[in-house]
Image (cartoon, rainbow, N blue to C red; front, side, top):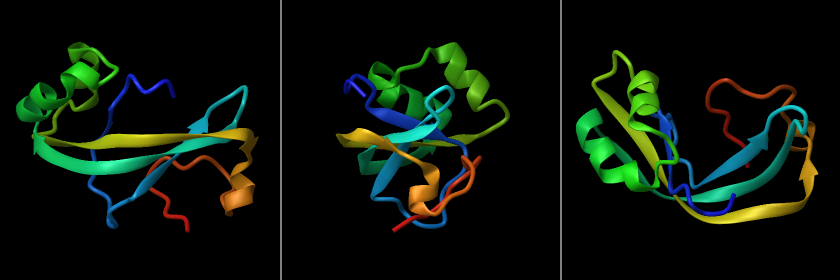
Length: 107
């Protein structure tokens, strides 16, 4: 939320290209606390992806390698402007019952 992390990694390419990502805080908060604009989507070999994103990844190389274990390529969202909500919102407020384990598209 403080802007030091500039990339968010994913193993699976989404069906639709997101313009914004909702930020959900797990327990004990369990609410949506903000959102962030997606400036760019990088899909590259793991070596190229790490080299391009490592400085602002927010994770170690060991964690990166473990996350992408048995994958040949990875995806990183380049994060832009962060919007922090004054009051966290429930998942129900955007029509979702439980925290998704994969992509969910909302309007």
